[in-house]
Image 1 (cartoon, rainbow, N blue to C red):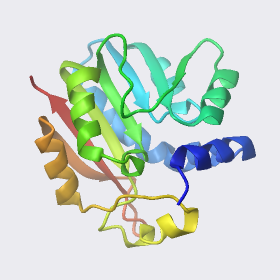
Image 2 (cartoon, rainbow, N blue to C red):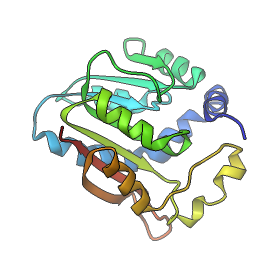
Image 3 (cartoon, rainbow, N blue to C red):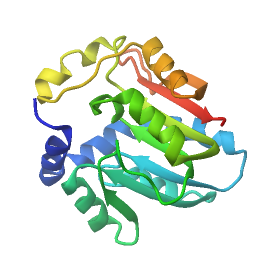
Length: 205
């Protein structure tokens, strides 16, 4: 099995980042819509964890109430791609598991990233403790989960380790990290697609 950051760097070089954006956009827009409702019209700052080519950062920065959004990704070529598209944006190449922002933010978003991490509970704790302001929101979506039978062969197909957990196991991990689960739902679900397992979490302490 290869490191996910290595595979995604190759994908950026091959232009596959565009397909990732197109494929994930419906779910991401639904997730962000649910997350931003929590701010009730207030301004917010944001981080996109595993930002890829930066398309979600650009989406956030185009919103009237987002005062600043930045992206972080472990794949060097993805960050290079993001910076080439958005020269004024803030994009950082870093290991998500150990990186910290200079200042906590109101919203952390992540799409199709968490199950690649070596220690998911530790990362959830890390985001809660170091990335988010009090009352901040962590919104994430994953397509690789137990109830989605279509995804069960992805790890072997891509050649990357992908953790497999059920919906309830993801919920328990989030709660164990100190988050309040505001919403758990399937974004962009259709008759042919199980949907993106999505969470809107709140930091209360």
